[in-house]
Image (tube, rainbow, N blue to C red; front, top):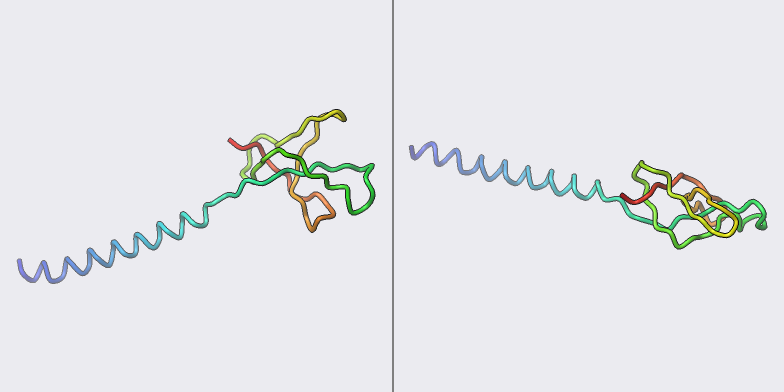
Length: 93
């Protein structure tokens, strides 16, 4: 019985530590940041065609994030380097 305790306790502590490290890493990598969506305006001057909106969107796939204003309904995108609209954004679930 004493030998079992001498072996089992360190093994249990080691396994709990490894499990905690894995859970922390998995949690950190699963974070998705919500962000403001940008609409593409082809009539704007070059370099200013990606126009910010007040609508929050996410990168997690789902329904396409869209924005409605006086000119109609547009799909929203990420802003890439301040000059162009890139990846499609999705509605926050």
